[in-house]
Length: 265
Image (tube, rainbow, N blue to C red; front, side):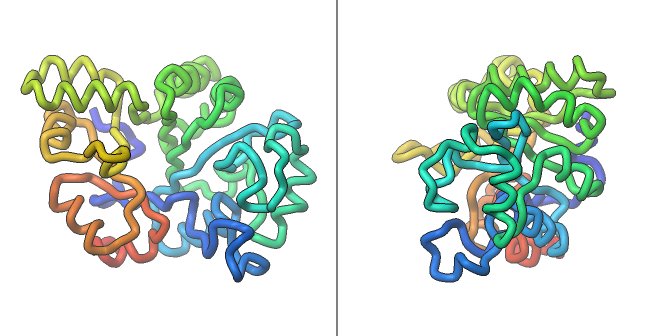
């Protein structure tokens, strides 16, 4: 059965990668007035552009708050070498106020009640806390992590917290590696076992010199009802190419461009 996370939204799906930002860091010339990734304004811009899905990342502050934030430290965005977990939420909010505004995950879910959130659980501390936050939003949340054990821990936390259903989920690195092997075997039974409990696989075109996205992988995933999303695709021609090769969606820094290119806007 298709998870509600995917129901009622057009395909191919466009996932706004960390929202719709106008710069990625302090070193950018226009950084003083720019909207940074994973901020309230970036999420709002993606929503205004017509995106149904936002891909975001979560880490924990010194106060234990689950925040929308990608990096382990503040260096790239703020030129500050401190780890995020060493900084209190209030201070971080002040530091980011001029560039889009800090969001806790709880505030993001409340502020954008019609958006669907694809959440990368970046650390164990998030997996331990996220369940209670997403439990009442499980129909519009997908939980993922490079670490399959962390991903599963987050899902179990949501169910323990009273979620009416399991949040959607996409496989981590081990799942994707196993799927790559299974897709070459021609065994639907093996693919079924690898993708049990999985709603999507979200993959790059390649990992270093190793191709990851392929028609055989797409066919294998589709044979058991699992979607394939490709990241991070910002070139219009490449967006069209992966969709024509069978991808169900793209994760992109340019959701506005992707929506028009793929005929969704």
